[in-house]
Length: 194
Image 1 (cartoon, rainbow, N blue to C red):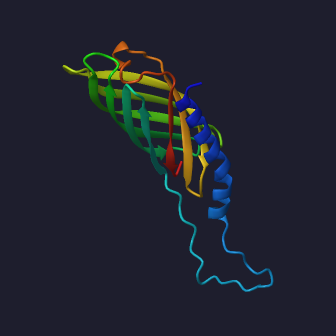
Image 2: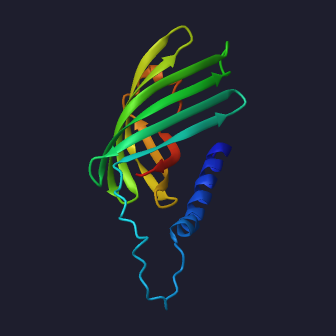
Image 3: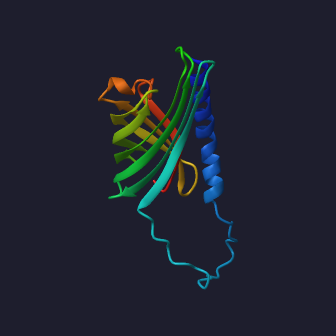
């Protein structure tokens, strides 16, 4: 197992083990005296209506002696039902690859639309269609990706979660190999409202 894979697994493990305490800290209100029978309704606010919108994103960084990859992917989603949602994601990626001569530098950008369905309270299936404008050095090419997979949601607080997605491209367009050099694609980010 590579050093970066071990570091990722260790980070996920640490976050997973620390989040129950964080969630308990965030969701625990002030302790009330059990002998206090008074009810103070003057400061009670009506329940806040839950928004159907959610947002989040991920920032990816991969560094080695010969390759630098930086990826930024914000997204916005809309809940159709309690289990089904749709959304859109923007993608920007900077690649500096020195494994070839001359070395290759690229700035890629694109967008996608996705659908998610919660199969369990903390797990979802996802389908995503993405178009990315890839800089090949002498021209740009619009490359499609059809990503299928799923994800896991780990609550961090009342409205914030760690979101892990594992997606595989089923189109496998050969022009996209420099943009995505590994399968499956693993995204780890923060989500608000999902």
